[in-house]
Length: 423
Image (tube, rainbow, N blue to C red; front, side):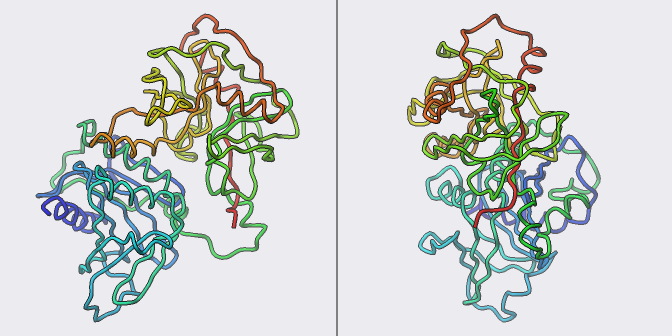
């Protein structure tokens, strides 16, 4: 109970700190879809952690908090007050659940500054399950004294992945909060540009909605006929798609193949792209150096793409899944679908989502550091051949410098834009 009280104390601190200036640049911050996140320091008996906040057109704010004890909580407010839909003379408690699963409800309470919902530790099965539901669900249902309110969960999957990474850094002591007379900011209101992005747009004609970017990922060019390989979860909820290469305009892309079980998708553009990745013939070895390239946190990080380096940590994924590779190269939301290359620049895998780290936490009792996954190149090859795409196959060549392999990765990687949302 003490830990839950600490999460509640953190919420109180967040509300009091709301009007303070934005945190220093070395304090982790992120923006994913409608969510804005930032690390917050300890205050009194409340441990440090990270929060992700989304503001709705009604002015209501939903905030997800994860502290360094890996305790998860939600806070719902309208500024520093209760949301207007909450009955004025409420007598009961608060219940919430994701989508149409009231049997998995979690409890909460009414406070003067808003509704606080206790989820518990993400290191146990119940908390981790709720964490996953928040990431994968469409709506958060909240009931106070029989009054129901629903909040759309758009972009939550990527925001929760960032939340875990942020909390990991704070927990590991990698974050230095600026010293000042008053406690550092826990969750500052986002900059004006981010605030505008957080508020859902006014209703617009369908054509306008279909042109709105609702998410993004990465992809890798795999044929000289315009085929692009990406992750299925990047494109599954999109009405239409566009892809962008550095220095070029966005072009429309069609989906020509999907494999949801292996989380792979095949796109095609009308005009072939100038550079094509080659798949490596030989299998990877455990400990081998690898490179991940992509466009994480679209609109926040470099528009020219980001590269990270690491090693193959294991030749299987979670629960000995032989389709997957475990890698130490850091990845972020938006890296999904991008290439994993060896140091010779050959394609050896397709980067997957880092939310899988929650599953590791359930099994191990701790949130792991730099545990990320990629679908093996051999699985990708089978998928491509099943759709009549014969990629270029090459043996492992000599290792390139980090700068040279980055330049090669940049040439064959595209940013995939999801437009609208499938109904």
